[in-house]
Length: 464
Image (cartoon, rainbow, N blue to C red; front, side):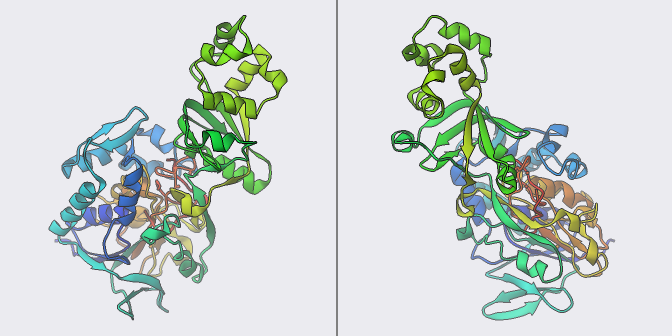
């Protein structure tokens, strides 16, 4: 009979709960959560739509993550469809929305899904330790936990870190954990916004007149990133599911000082010729009715085009198909759905272990809490329960090595190849979105949709 190992999971987000579920039948699992309850970020995320994953699977799902190919094996082992099957096993049925995102059946509340996951863990014998905070490492690189004012080093065969990113600090995700790893000589990168709104300098009274109004069924692109969906005009710029997937490209452009431009196709289902035919012979005042453009869209076109172009049918249609909006910044981390940053991918071996701690008591994982965040958490755990650390990472940590898992979606996949020779893994709750996303989250430092591990590498993301 295989020896049962004591496994410590630091952090109580969705990625941690999925990891606990996969490991509990075969090992003694202890979850250490700094708050008074688990899954707080899960509940907050559920207030904005509650999509659990994305219907993309196989190569389409892998393409949503960066660096390219980094999570192919993990996602191949446990993709979106496998995650939905796991949810069904728990009694949580799902459906695919028109956007391709996957939701629980209508009427199902976030707290209900969380309770099912938690109860399943309890039934499998998982031990929960609430108000237990990770505060660093001791001289033997064992994790130190603080509870009730007292500190102690964890004794476990394996430790998985599921600490979260740096967005929504009200839930406990402050990203301060990265400093503890930096003290060990591990390269970490600053957390930055992902799956967030973008700042645009609106002219005149545009924001006052149109903030809160949607731009529906538009195509958005920036660099080599693109998406179709809906954006909402805000006092500061734009946000929404059409914006989030292109944030990685905008973030890079802003950082490089090359100028961040958002390209909007306001009529993606029509060609230039088709639009020209619709306005042929019409006065500019009738363009809106001819092309079915609402007041907010027309105001946007007028705000970022000249009067001469507006009165030229061909130029007007060109702007409808390719309106350029200069982006000056991303919205602050506190407003972001997820973040990128954390452990640098260069610190990780192909099996997600930390190279410099290949034979130390450290191994980390991280995942990102976002559309695809939870799904990756399970893929990394072999069905026979044998810990094979190569993918035991945590949004994405004793005689083993550091491991970092990219966001939740990837976590699930990665967890399947848990190497028994490793002792620590880190699950990161940072939402690394594919193409950023992230789902996340993209997730460009290692992290999943986003996106639930505490070790999010900064050049790894998952799309949202």
